[in-house]
Image 1 (cartoon, rainbow, N blue to C red):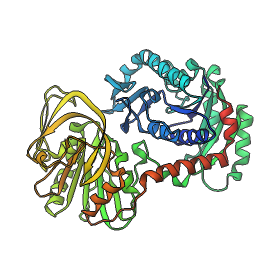
Image 2: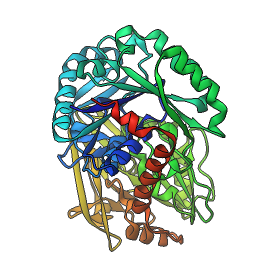
Image 3: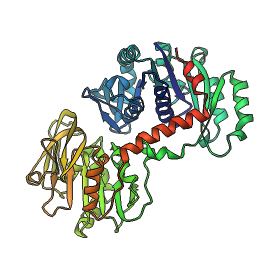
Length: 476
């Protein structure tokens, strides 16, 4: 087994991007590399070739390695459904729901699956680059931990600690982590790096030496802010970004449990349109040409949330003005006349009226559809994936949005409201161009090629500012 783990001093310090860049850098050195994250919490999931689901960050990291995503790369995925509870995915399959307190009791069972997945990846590849979650300094969570030091100790994987200088206090972040973790955990850490530096990194020389002196850990470098990070899919909702292009105004409703929002990345990259991620409490702008109701981990919960913002009224007015509406997955279900949840698969059992913009009805069911699909839409090739509970039917389904190869989605009689279960559809250049052309907007091709180019640029960036060879040599 040869592996190294990147842990962070906190959430959102750039661990996912660092691992993606290191995966690409190590792969370019001729190694067979695989990514691994023991436990992830995200509603942005990817469907794997073996028919399961993992966090999209690990799917991007697999791409950096030239691999197909596999459920072993992220054996535990938590998909938040409420502020206190989440669906628990083990090795790609949902095994139930758990409240935060109850989840702690599940961890011993989950650790076995984590170690099994890690062992398979380690046996199949020269190097495994592991990503932690949150921070090892959250010592209140250390008992039964499977995401950071609990995993590192169990699998005997050495750790490099990443700090985030952009949020300030990076010396305290790194030195403080050593101060609060126990001696056994601290012994797993072989060194540190500083991420997201803006300006001249030489200005931090004194601080860098101070961290080395106080911790006794070696430094692997200071990574300047990677300006092209926006070219790579983001996993966390906090990273949702708008674009400032001209032309068609596309508005996406930022739901409380928004999921698979990387559907929007190809639109954010288009210079011929302006994408607004509409925050709660804001009205849908009158100049919006297209409003997107995105995917969600809780269709009924976010339908209530949508109504609480007054967006149901805004959507009806937008449609009356001649505007277009697109619902994706859970957003598609919301656009219908009724959502029937007889078993409480999405919450409390019962029927809830939808927004009524499509003449369809959805019946929820506990079984989840997880599949990759290819086909055509608007006369163009399209590919993507489905990840949803429930089946939708009704008169508007006689005008399907796509054939993948079975009919998918529905289009209203006036042609201005569309629903689809297909995630990832805008990544296909020809389809995206055809879709935007119907709305009077032009499209720039090359989105997928741009993601690969950004991964190469990220690897170059890390090679220029980190001692990558020494960092990879930590692996054992």
